[in-house]
Length: 454
Image (cartoon, rainbow, N blue to C red; front, side, top):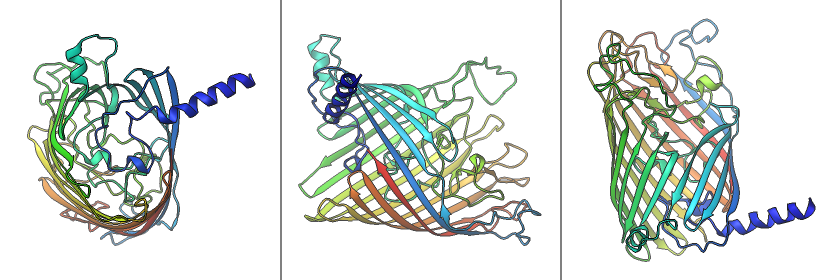
């Protein structure tokens, strides 16, 4: 038994150099987008285990326009919170090197605010080579191409490469993700091409986080489908990413994701972990139903077409000082199964980061993020949701505006350990003066987080 344990441990240690095809879950994975092509020598099948844990501290204050602020007597009054540590979130990653250029990646959410118990996030096979097909032309194509098949992150836009994902918060220089958080795992296939800096991505998915085999009765859902089938979703990305000089890197991409109909598309609500802003926006205390404070889901769960443009610039001013900018512009249009017409939602975000220190192990950042969206009337769909809170809509539709300013600072103590602190202020406008907790809503204050990821 002792010999077996030592042999297994040795195999795990050897794996630390074997997984160059997969994005590192430490500081070296920051500002990595589509996995770069690398040539790793294959010796034998090996496996690697990794994990991430995020431990947040929340000291946010929120307020709204409701007169009676007793949450026990008024359901529109806000939960009375106080500074404290929030529930930690943790992930487990299992990476297996199966053959020359063939890697299996499986991820689990061990604990989170929305799913307190362990859930499988997903898993996919990544092909950087196809050693089982002996064809010279295919070998040449695979020098620039990566193929992924399985349940995986939807590669729409570039913002999802910088977000916090449960316990894995080490890529994110801020406490939270965008207000309109584009993230979901869907079953499908994707091909990524990187030729001399030119980026191309095409993919197809089933369009659902939680797929169903149910028969679709189009006569019972007149606005849902045109063909009675489970429709696929399609995605594409085109861009350019190049280290133009020793000091300057530029990346620009445009992406599109579209589906003609879905049982329940979750591109804007596919996170199963929760927000890092806790105990805000709700009448009740923290729990699985109040896990997404600070976010907005436009509720476009049936027909959806959305496009995103991203610009990433990084300039090394000095050997120990670099500045970077990440810009996102997004426009989405779609509807729910209960709506006859489509609604729109748009988002803008600008991140400005200063990284300094010998290994860029310190950073200061500022983010400005805005969302404008149409909210359905009560006579149509039940309405969009902000976090899990349904906006009570009046007889006519209206437009809501949300803005957030965040100032952050952080320290990579080692490449596997990060600490960060943030001041944020988020405001809501356009919510009608009806019986809703979000009328005149605002939150602001400090939050901090310790992250360990390996």
